[in-house]
Amino acid sequence: MDCTASTLRTEHGNIAKIAIIIDNATWHNKLTPESEPPKRAWKKESVVEWLTARKIKFETYMTKAELIPLAFNHLPPKEFIVDKIANKYDIEIVRIPVKHCVL
Picture 1 (tube, one colour):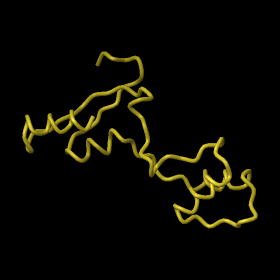
Picture 2 (cartoon, helix red, strand yellow; picture 1 turned 135 degrees about the horizontal axis):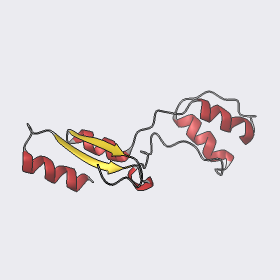
Picture 3 (cartoon, helix red, strand yellow; picture 1 turned 180 degrees about the vertical axis):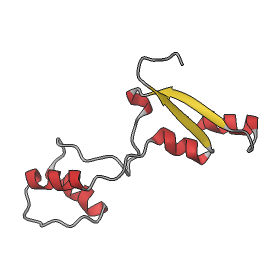
């Protein structure tokens, strides 16, 4: 995506408005590492690291079952990798529903 966005921007210049149309397939909706939520399958240590990295207060005696809801209450806003790259090159992303490839 980075290569495509870069090429489009250099070919069309800085003034042109560019939009990329993609469907909502799972591979287009990968979250950035910063906005990725914790997984229920994670070990307690991983959940503790996730909470600590985001400066969310919790007690050390809390169990994993208590930490997971706390983490889900403090989820960061979703930020997609595709959107982040497109914003870097001032390109708009238009999403269409899955399996609706005809506009």
